[in-house]
Image 1 (cartoon, rainbow, N blue to C red):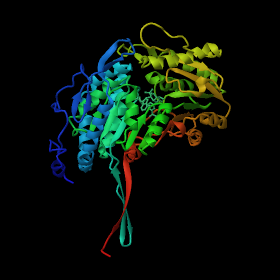
Image 2 (cartoon, protein in one colour):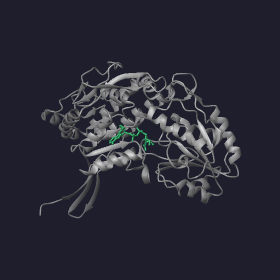
Image 3 (cartoon, rainbow, N blue to C red):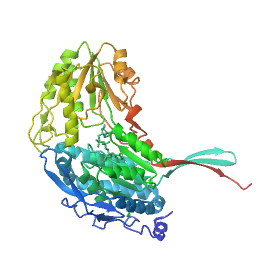
Image 4 (cartoon, protein in one colour):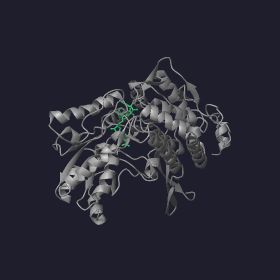
Length: 502
Ligand code: NAD
């Protein structure tokens, strides 16, 4: 169907690239960062009730944001459903173009988005900028993929397998990468022809609201919407009968609730959940080099990354020397407010998570753990936690089994490769893992025996947005990124087409 045929539906009239856009700011008007709105059917809206997130470095209020009601959810669902067919009918190339233009717009607004991200999420400004760059790259990579149409010649028939959009999607986003994860879901949904309603975390709502406000300049009303709210909102969205798909990134515990709720109408789900990534350090590594990298991958984003190194498994022959190098490099990592020069670790993002991480510190004394570095927290304003390594805690301790999602990591030992593999796999998580060795054949052999969605050799947390990403075991279901990520927003349809009349 051509763009003009879309117009005749009355849902999307011709714009500069064939589509009428939502909220009609000129493309070059900078966003304002004082008011934050929901976006329903192309319009910016506020709500009777509002709330504020907290800047985790200062504990001061961030700007107020809407609290969506159940009625707002219903209206957003109606707008999304109305937008679905016309948007699905827009040619693929035109949808790709819209996503690419939107990615350019985010890139142009990189600085204000980054500054606000530091204020709202807490991460140091250089990592906030990196998050925006990665969001732009993810959107571009997603928009450059083409869904395949697979054809099989079968005598008098041609069998065609194609991928058609599912319908209304909901994107539930956590607080650790609020822009990146919203942008990735948004791009994959809309390029494949699905409208999406984004729900940011109540702890980091502002960035997601602005992202979707910016999107209105590139997509017709109802195609990209956003609702900010309280703890009820995710439940209302996942229980609503309209969506065909829920894309959820967050904790394993919440993921199970989302799946249960989605099962009522058999909504498709993609669940990107928690992790307990092991890094296996063999006895033939360059100790100082690898220790520096492991400190980075354990404490980046203050340990609040699904793919952070959360268990450091070191060969017993080198564990003491490795621990000393790790301690040296960890001590170099500066903790503080994200705009201060040289800061590597910002605060924990919110008070709830702060209390949870502090619970792991309480275990240190209770269980008589050996603190290799850190262990004492600064106190005062802000949710700051000192990067901490615990030397060989009990293997059944909470710190070894659970995901603290903060900067406290256990150092564990193994005697041989077999034992390293067994220990690495001894978890109900299966998100990522890495193997570090001077002998790549050995490392590659170990890597192939690890039960995780992504396994790296001599690196960790390296992501390519054109390659699928997902978890094994209780770290998730399905994929984001790459062709598998695109297909997760589609039905596969098989057509047995006749070549001639009977
Ligand atoms: P969370 O599960 O508390 O919340 C995630 C989102 O779900 C938020 O928007 C929240 O408001 C919403 N939500 C909460 N309860 C809900 C319910 N009952 N129904 C529907 N939605 C609901 O997660 P979080 O604390 O924001 O994020 C941290 C977790 O996310 C960690 O476990 C981390 O490992 C995981 N994570 C995973 C990935 C991945 O790609 N695998 C990426 C980032 C974070």
